[in-house]
Image 1 (cartoon, rainbow, N blue to C red):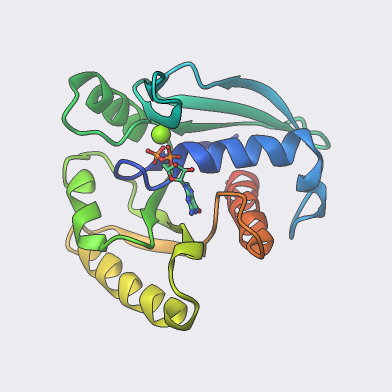
Image 2 (tube, protein in one colour):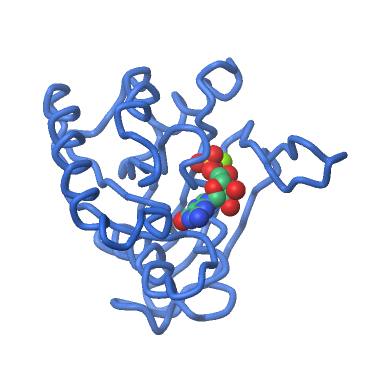
Length: 204
Ligand SMILES: Nc1nc2c(ncn2[C@@H]2O[C@H](COP(=O)(O)OP(=O)(O)O)[C@@H](O)[C@H]2O)c(=O)[nH]1
Ligand SMILES: [Mg+2]
């Protein structure tokens, strides 16, 4: 049974990754990804998601309490829990969620958005005290990197991230490059987001 926490700065896509994964489970698309197998949703809780601007109709939401998804592997009957707290360090209640999840989760996925400098995204992690010795790193929003710059952008980000966590005696077990949003021609990277979570859940 895995307890996976997705941690990262505001708007890197933690909630979207969770929702995408739930969609893969519900549509059984999860069977067809690499390493795929049938899994069912046991429980989802996205009630901690506050809609920021209901009046303008802008679908922007912000995670106040940690979102949570429980799913089960059909063949082994193993349950796994995914947590995605908010990334807004300024709010005490959000910070509490981050602290709680960082202590509960045995597997941590540090989520970074590819369209913003990683340096700006490190501050979130400086505040997290409890980390396992090894973590997973996920690069999301890969679609937002111009096509000719994709490989070089990722390589540079990897170096900075390895360096940042090494100073905290944390090593990176795996890097995953994903796209959590429904974008034309990025289906492969949607699959990779689902593969990432399934792999981490089933190997732990
Ligand atoms: N283009 C693009 N947008 C994304 C991707 N993942 C998330 N988003 C968008 O980024 C915004 C923030 O995502 P959200 O999941 O709320 O981030 P969180 O604060 O980390 O939970 C939303 O408007 C998402 O639709 C992605 O892979 N590509
Ligand atoms: Mg969120």
